Length: 180
Image (cartoon, rainbow, N blue to C red):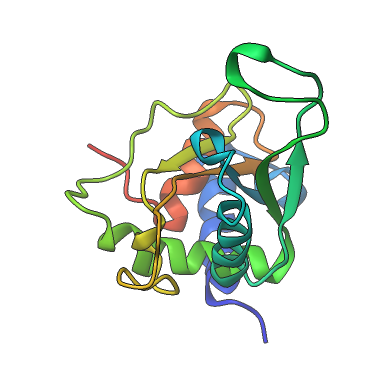
């Protein structure tokens, strides 16, 4: 079964972007290639069970087992040794990516506290978008009472757009609520 957001992209967004930017071929239309969710454990590095809790939470949210990231070199000011676990990351592609984006747009973003839209200043030069969350409790899989410590996360949406304008147009047509 294909995700609703993917069907909407194929039927509505592709023709609209093709017309807007004057693309001659459907393959020129930008699309989302992957979504990367990253959590750094940072200040809770010394707590032994915190990284396991973060892994469980991220697995619940994404439906995929996360990978631990390790430090490349020792930094004494941050009390980090070489090859120490410092974060957790998940890369989503295909159907899981579209299901996650659907949940993000329809459920999670409206549940965030004082939500008025997302900033359109978080694009890089290639049309990729970065979105940060201060609390993981905005996701419906995480219950506020059972979460011992809340943690933030960064969501990077990678597109194959050529520039910022094409990436912004793609995300706007998909329904991302940018601040006006």
